[in-house]
Length: 196
Image (cartoon, rainbow, N blue to C red; front, side):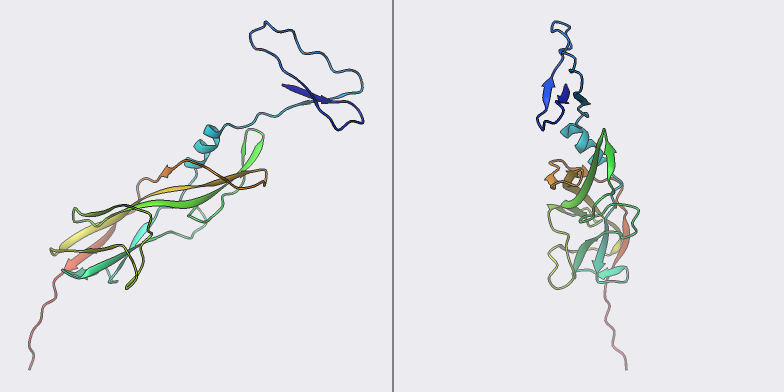
């Protein structure tokens, strides 16, 4: 599509060309008229593909009791923690502007869901909770056997985008993060003994 604006006018005049060759070529702009080629607009699919390819941070599980160990039959509390190193994009952060075709696009990441793998064959299932610390954290698990486990969190993100500094709009897609780190954790048994 080509647009032009008559000199001294605020109104744009448009013409389109068919790719089949059946339509005549658009008329030439009269002398003294400014001709402007409309820049291509990125599709929603292109915007979504750019979002999922961003360098997202990976969440790491934090557990209580702290110190890398917990007790058998004692509730353990879990929380998703995100790095704050500036090299990756965490929930709540905004990306640097990137060029997509001729447009400047920014993205803002947001939490969508978590899956806590407790390392003993049990998991939380998908939840929207980032967990929390004792006593209010709502992601909890009680180990029934002693041993060493590796805990990790699968996470998905969503977010929003804006074009050329305009209004934020829902991205309507999901970034499924991969290779989230595992954290070693030990489950031990408390032993009582009498001392004199």
